[in-house]
Image 1 (cartoon, helix red, strand yellow):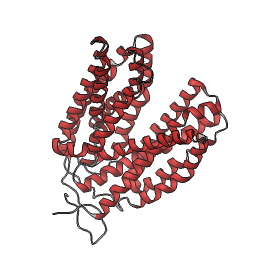
Image 2 (cartoon, one colour):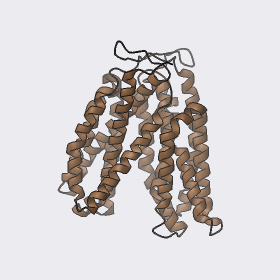
Image 3 (cartoon, rainbow, N blue to C red):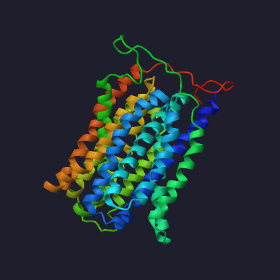
Length: 417
């Protein structure tokens, strides 16, 4: 039986490490926000502006990171981006005032953005060597890292430790944890094979995909991220405000969504391997749309079934949206060539959905109602299928024959497990 190169297997472990640590940093940061708010007396408006600055810094740095990945390789960018993203936690942890926090928040966002692009670029390179789906599990591990960061913060607070000191400790320790993961990454990216494009005039290269195709992929990413963000921000509030559930039960709506999404991400690679990318993205949008339809219908069904209807809807939405990002990123990598610029653009599109979603839905909910606001992610969930399916089909037509992996001499060449 053919074997995957040892270098690729080691790189897969390294990428798992990057995704876990990136999620862990985000989990620590998110769970520590209440303590940071209390320490600096920020209030909703100032805290919101800090979060906006982080997102803005991440969005800009993603666009810069793409060319860096193509020029220096994802491995080299990962070497400095990972430790940097952990170390810059020190800024918000030590910020003595709102204004210093605002400046340091941008730096924190830059670290997050560069790491996001670099580790995702390396993940598609590793998948290219494996020649089978492996990306979805990375994103599932990111979610586990976030849960670990949040859980550790909760335990520390219950034990009487200030969240500020936990962030300081993380800023010192996490950069060193990134180093062994970076050491395991592929020594060189897979060879940049190219093929003729659909019109026969230009090579297919991940760094030179047609803008129209990148925009279509970006639209699918934007729709998927906004629909995901809507569930994160509004699932529990929908249960409390619209369905009038008990305050202790309302958070379960988000928990069900999160558990469904994480589970499918951890198990999603064999599913995509069996169904193929086009059918997987098509089903993702259909299931997510159906989930939102059930959530929207939940207030009008029988009182005894309202909560069950909504929980089923959030579970279906989580199952569908779980595969969107892994499938899109994998498709960009499968097109061959250098993936940095194209992946950075698609990532930035998606991230802008997370950035704009809370503001847009909050505005609509304030001036109309939350159920009307949730029509937006319901429609965008359908856009995942409408935009993602033709985009991936076009990318697969551009995909070159599998490229030989760049592995150390003496190791077997890449093949399917």
